Amino acid sequence: MITAHDVEKISAEGERAIRAADDLNALEEVRRTYLGRKGKLPAMFREVPSLPSAERARVGDQLNQVRARLEAALDARAAELAGVTLTKRLASEATDVTLPGRRRILGRLHVLTRTLEEVQRIFHGMGFEIVEGPEIETEEFNFERLNIPRDHPARDAQDSFYISDEILLRTQTTSVDARVMIGRKPPMRILTTGRCYRRDAPDWKRMPVFHQVDGFMVGERITMADLKGVLSSFARQLFGPQTKTKFVPGYFPFTEPSAELYVYFNEEWMELGGCGMFHPRVLEYASIDPQRYTAFAFGLGVDRQVMVRYGIPDIRLFWDNDLRMLEQF
Image 1 (tube, rainbow, N blue to C red):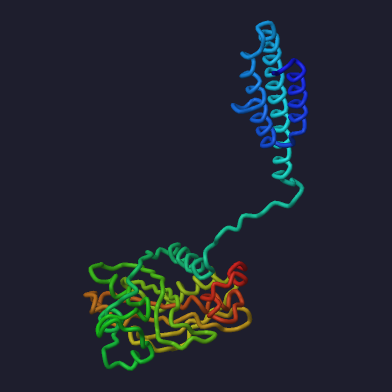
Image 2: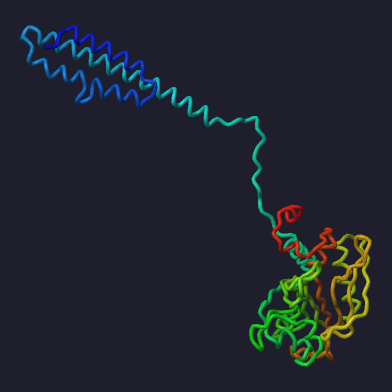
């Protein structure tokens, strides 16, 4: 039979257990032990009806007081432990504001892409329209409309990747010139840029895929002087106002006369590409009267321009995806 002494003993024991609980899980275990459905205090409440009638009210009232006291102690200890837990968590998650910041690494355009866009801006400023053309081309536009028939030896120098007997990866962006002229009436100024393909063995200055800039101007009384003026202005804008240029006689099946453009940069003469006046047959293929109109055209390599301009020793570095090289530009 329970007595008032037993009740006070359970109360003191429970309060000690509450104070000894060092985390919320241990405190919950104390609550179940003393106040849970099968706990010690509810067991005492179940014995109250068996007490003498004179003791029931007094012991029952004492048990209610103990229960209220233990519940209050549990709530207070829970709040205390929660504060400690939060403090520990905040301390573990604290940021040292004195540390240097972490820079976000931003992507950037490839140096070849940036150079192509710069070239487009220069020619656009001179009135050229920027157009695009297919990289998969027919022999008709890649060769025949550029005055390079099937048995012409120039095809050997431009051996490419054939998809079928008549379809290949374009060997030059000049093929876009042949397409653009169809259905248009002079005057016109056109520039195109993009990838070209030839079956070259990779080495420090050649790759099977390379980038080219190609442009032409058609109109009345267009001469080599116009060509030299446009390309010299382009070179000065790209490489600097003091850049020297020279034109060396050359040969291309679709231009006559033909020349090669050189610029003096970094104390050496660098070939940029070929140029010249469109062969009359090229104009005739596009239904443009060569007796009334003349045209100049040029095709400039981009990869080697970038190599010389930025001191890049090997063209294969453009394709290696090595961040040590790419992050310099």
